[in-house]
Image (cartoon, rainbow, N blue to C red; front, top):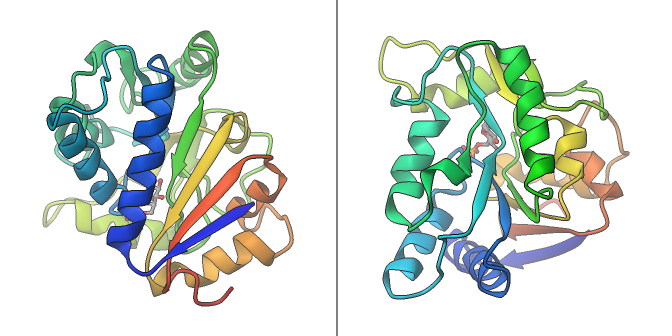
Length: 240
Ligand SMILES: N[C@@H]1[C@@H](O)[C@H](O)[C@@H](COP(=O)(O)O)O[C@@H]1O
């Protein structure tokens, strides 16, 4: 596990953007695994800026997002599909048909199976971008999710529901379930970049890096992956 610590979030955003854009330039058919939450917003803003200034071409790129809330269609402003279109896809020359976000509506069990097949058909994920929950979740794989899970329907932990409430309008409740890539889906990615910022992530980062590998702390499984880089700001790295 490689750990890269920068002084602040701006430097982290720059470094991760550089990694992703350079990898995409050297492999224009790259398959990117993408994440949502507040952490990647600064990265996506920089990817858009870099693209607009005549940088990376995304016309042959395929993407797969980690997760989606149950019951939210893509046009719902709190859905992850909406988030991705709004922050990234609408501003790149990527083909929307090559961007995949798990379906939150319809036959979810069938959609989970199709999602796994679609990733395989695309040749697997070259780089998976991850954030981390304060409780160690990756995607929506909460504590005690078995390490062998594929894309599945997951229950959100109470603290996840509370911390994600900021992305929902007043009076709207956060769904209690979501569709998420499983731990084994994530672990199949050829390369993983996990980004953590701020003091609230310090303990989760410490357990990820130095704790036992346990389903109690889902991100600890990354210790078993051969090609993981953690990009941290000084606050997130403060307990290492
Ligand atoms: N499903 C997402 C995760 O993929 C993300 O890593 C986490 C952290 O979010 P934030 O970056 O806002 O702290 O939030 C959500 O629960």
